[in-house]
Image 1 (cartoon, protein in one colour):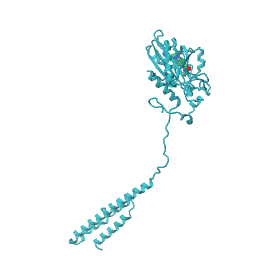
Image 2: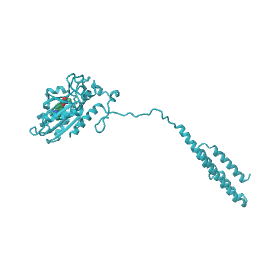
Image 3: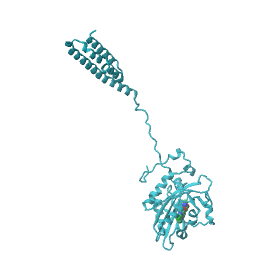
Image 4: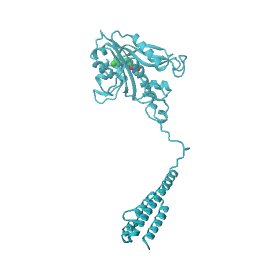
Length: 353
Ligand code: 2NL
């Protein structure tokens, strides 16, 4: 068989294999096999030296044409294979656009966090600072500095969890305020809001929890009077419970304030007519307050002859329960998602969403 015939045969064989190629890899293999340096066409070129001189140029030309033919067949086939591969991929990756989407669940803020944030926004707007402190406190800051010496009968109402004789879980957020007063070094004004968790040695039931939340406020400056207290709480009540709310002060007693008052708001449900929320009275008790006792000012480093102040304390748990109609305080602490997800969230600017 002549070299030319062998060349024709190889070309024919290559073209058949190219047509049978199903993948880019098959095609690459064919290319390496026929056009590679060690392939049969290169071998034929080496045999060219055995041809008569006058046939050499023609044979060389035929080899180049055969190479170009094979290469162009490979290029054409490559286009077809790529299309086949793409179609196969598209068929394999078909998605069903009618399937329901996996909508990510969005969390929401816990009702207590929400109430606390709303209250903080109101007081930040009035120029108060938010101060937080420790939950494990000393007897001194939790009781003594608040005019509750060791023998004081009011200590009975705030039985605590004791870590030692002198260290306990705080029963209110007042120790944060007592510590802050010291830091001011007797120089007013002080305008602070102290939110946080507090603890009492109580048996849990629908209205009592051994751990709950408190927000206290403290203002100290020259010439602070009950009028400042009343105006501030009036504004607060309207911001949190609605523009139509009125407040009512009733005389009361706290060891750390003198005089002391209980503060009621007109019922936000019935507007004062009497309903189940206000138990027919038209008023709802929401906080305790008063003018800071001179002993407390003095222990905090403020001269009671120069400075006076007001303070108040409230329970965000109770406020959340009133506002959302929650009948058992334990719902706030058992983290049942069926309960927790019923509340809207709060935006960064304090608005609801
Ligand atoms: C209530 C009553 C109150 C205070 C808390 C306070 C703090 C300092 C000085 C004076 Cl440092 N008073 N706090 C005053 C009156 C009432 O809380 O019913 N809380 C839930």
